[in-house]
Amino acid sequence: MSDSPKILIVDDDPDIVEAMRVVLESKKYSVSVAGSGEEGFAMAQSEKPNLIILDVMMETGSKGFEVSRRLNADENLKKVPILMVTAIKEKTGIGFSRESGDDAWLPVDEYVEKPLKPDELITKVEALLKKNPA
Amino acid sequence: MNGTPEENLIRRAYWFIRIRWIAAAGLVAITYVASRAFHIPIRAPALYVIAVVLAAYNLLFLIHLRRATSGTEPVRAPAINRTAAVQISLDLLALGALVHFSGGVENPFLIYFIFHMIIAGILLTRRAAFLQAAFAVSIFTSVALLEYSGVLPHHCLRGYVGQTLHDQPLYVTGVLVVLASTVFAAVYMATWVSSALREREAALAATNRLLVEQDLIKSEYVFRVTHDIKGHLAAIRTCLDPVIEGVTGPVPPEQLNLVNRARRRSDTLLAFVKALLELTRMRMCREVAMDAFQVESAIESAVNYVEARAVANSIVIDREIDATAGWITGARVYIEETFANILANSVKYSEDDSRITVRVVDEGETVLVEIADRGIGIPADEVPKIFDEFFRARNARAIERDGTGLGLSMAKQVVERHGGEIWIESGEGRGTTVSVRLPRNPPRGLSAGPALDFQRGEAYHDGSAGRRGVAQPG
Image 1 (spheres, rainbow over the protein chains, first blue to last red):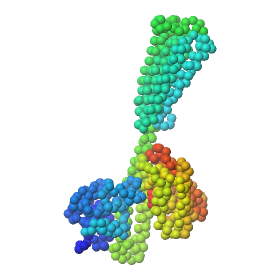
Image 2: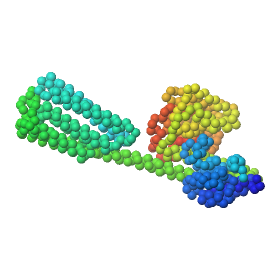
Image 3: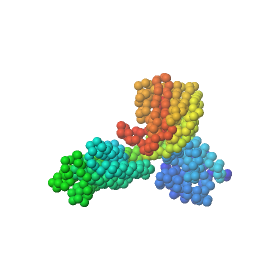
Image 4: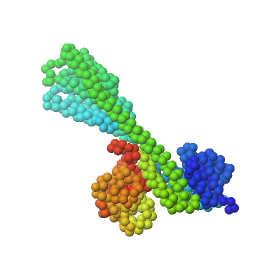
């Protein structure tokens, strides 16, 4: 790896974005930021990040889901791991253990609830980047 | 009147059928007594045939009604009403035939036409009931006129009346006028009373619907507000953490102290908001998905959840699980969270190096789960309040200042929505045992929608599950 891995944060909450950026940059990642799902998808295409951190509720309550499906359908981007962060885990069944294998409906690699502690964020990011090295 | 208008309708339909059995039996008995004991020359065979016909079509209507009400499809009120109208018309024809074979205008049972008018007034709409009245009048008028004119033979009740009356115009007219006016008056009164009742029934049903709707609106409101608050809290936490953990550079102890306090408070609020979101969500859920799962695996999941903290405090969690504990049906996630909530309390309020015992007892149709600790217990005067929302015992508050006070109330809500029971035995310093009894197969309907809790007005004063909403001693 010559360059540091590029991470794209797609979230419409500027404070969360800022805090995540600080944490990730402290680990020498190169971070770019998108404030909406549409902007995020466009930036994913132009910047080809190594990892995307994607919020669920943005323009719509499920914009993140939509974006993740579009990313998965894009030949150039389908291999990019997605860490999905959500303010709220919808409905019962997701609350207790998400590991119970119904990823089929959501093409994301991790699905976590906000807030995410700095070390959790780093651990997840490192694990996902190992899956898809730059 | 209780029950929905549909339930009342079905109850009345069954009632009507029960009455007809009595009528058929009564007809046989009276025919027998009149012909054998009093030797009145009625046409007994014809009357027995009428009784059999009556019983036969009653049986058909009973089968029809059972079939209509046993299915999963909702019962349609108009269909039931139409069937009732047909039954009344058939009854009127049967009564007309009966009267003809037993003396015509001479028969005192002529007055029984009124019963059908009252039943019509209760079961049918006003219009349909008056149509039945007109039908009844035309039937007994026809019988009287046809016998008077000699088209139909007259079966005189000799021995009961001194002479034939069917050929006496004044008598016949008198009977017809009195009977017709009585029939219409009966319908008028019966429909008046029953329409007033029906209006009240409809008003009650409408009020009930409104309450359910308003409750849902309230829940949605609480959900949205809580959700917004959670978004801000998550942002606060996400911003504080890097500072506290030194990501942005070293923080002097004085500053760190204050920022840490801010984080702890936001944590507390976050736990509270999450618990509130969970229980509001459950309240908004009219139906909770249920499936079958093993009691033991649910217990293990719950134990997993508290294991780390238990190990850290050298607390041992013993399991005494009946080999036949087996499967139960329920909302697994919520049941697990309930056990996890109770266990988390036990761990939190136990001294280091103590034991917690989880017992699972197979009781046949139900399963009993007992979680017993040897912790600080609950002061006796506070035990009755322990399931109240937001309540926390004073010794619990002394140990841990922050807690939602929602944990056990949510546990109670979950257990009760499964048709189970939950209770607590405790005393200060004597440890606490929380017992949960769950039916293996929750009764149908319980899973659908929360029962409105009128004593507690607020939408969020309702429990469900919140894994992190552990606060009360247990």
